[in-house]
Amino acid sequence: MTTEYLGETFSDFSDVTPDTVESTPGPLSGSRGTRHGTGTGMPRGRRPGKTKLDSLQKKLSGEMFQAGAMIGMGLHTTGYYVCQESDAFTKALVDLASKRPEWVTALEHVADIGPGIVVGKTMLGIGASLAVDRGRADPEKQFMKFLGVYSAWKAVQVKAGDEMEEGSGYRPPPAGTFVPVS
Image (tube, rainbow, N blue to C red):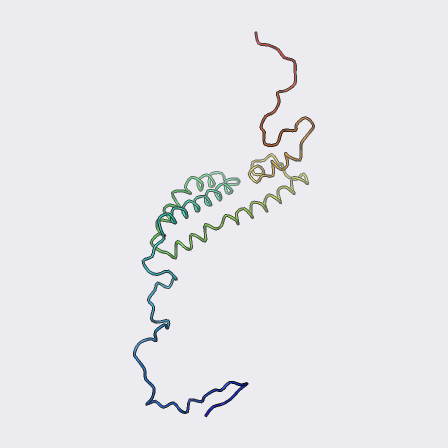
């Protein structure tokens, strides 16, 4: 017996008998149970190459160093220590992860934090520059120099006679009478 619904025909399987059904033991070919993998998407035994691990280590080290520099603005010793240990720490971390492809993938995602740091630094700089414009913060502080607020403030504070050629560090000597050394 068949049923028709919206132009499609469906069978009620009344013509199928247990004597006509054939089966084979084990999973069907192509089903989930036929592949034996690690569950990570990468075949077992496949490890990233040395150059990939080296570039990952350098990227992680740079990110850790930059984070240490930012921490060092408020916590001097901690920031210095993070910068000092960034290379050795990331080498050890990548060496431990090199035998596990899923760990390497996780570290690659951690190494992509650079754009987030730039966005955070820019947002802090915008807030700091607003404080400078309102007269609530000193633009000559070290933290302001790190954010780049000092250079922006200095550029808008040009006075007559202080103009410099763009890209040049030359400043003319102070005007005065020449006195030769005898």
